[in-house]
Length: 89
Image (cartoon, rainbow, N blue to C red; front, side, top):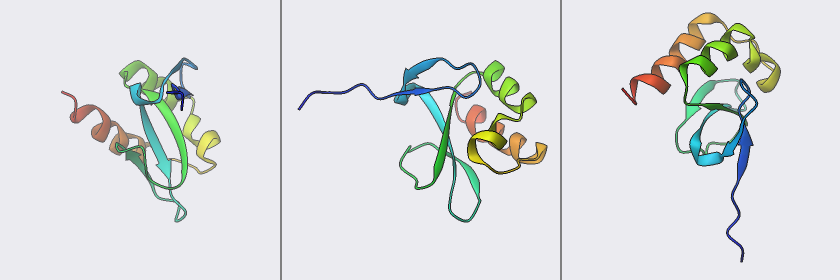
């Protein structure tokens, strides 16, 4: 079996990268949005670069709303920001 490189597109900058290089944000069947560090949770997913500029652009353009098909308030964005960036610093 060939070893495929799974690529995904960042919803912010539209860069195509290996799935392992991106952060996955998932909406589960109950409508709960969270960061999926294992990249194995069930639900509709969106990928973003691990870059604060990409995150800011995603938030400003409200790109999670169109990708996950659910409205996301600023409080949720700040919660996601904390999970993504506080773990790496």
